[in-house]
Length: 276
Image (cartoon, rainbow, N blue to C red; front, side):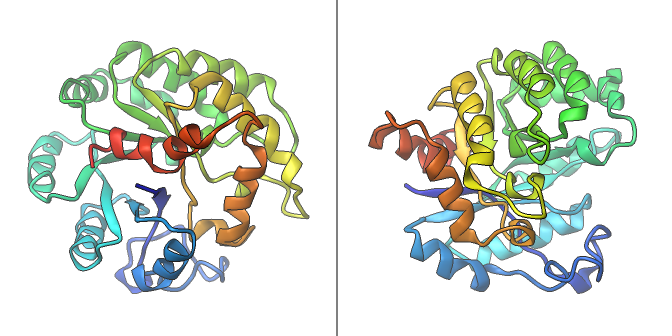
């Protein structure tokens, strides 16, 4: 099974998406399954995982309704507020949907990322980790230290790092990012998505070679069994078309990778991680 493990759908007039404004003209429009499915078919993907794009339960319910209408939606990663005292009740409602596969923590949007180390948050995450619920982690390379501390407190978390933790590809810096990623990769139930790279590259113009050291480092640390391809469509359109995103990753893969490793990257690992 071939799976795009990270993409988004949205309907602008819902009002959930405060970060999508007319200042982002490429994104300031509706993106729905009818727009992506031709690309999935072109590249022989069986379907995709929709990731939440707004911190509201209403948006999660909306993308679950899209999953009802589209066979190409294989799973939905929604949103839960673990700082809320009733997150468990809300989770119990969402989990009844057969395509609800987990939730995402939007650390990237937190002014103070150390809030994830508050006891109530850690205890809530421990409970979900005990159930082996998949959790996406959205963070930047500047937030890796508190996230590492969180993993040390919840070492059995079934988690995946979105977008390689957003390394500074535009500058070519590797050391800080590599140091913390290596420590995170030591937790056997943590995966990494090879996604969201083009929007971290130089917007004046990128080359395929810019991404090679980052892709190779992720693969060296996590191995072929704990990496996933995600297009980050339509966010990627700010810097590259879907075909270009795919070609960037193909170009950066190790030369000695055979079909088995590629099958895991392009679907097998996502199928296992999200329990499809």
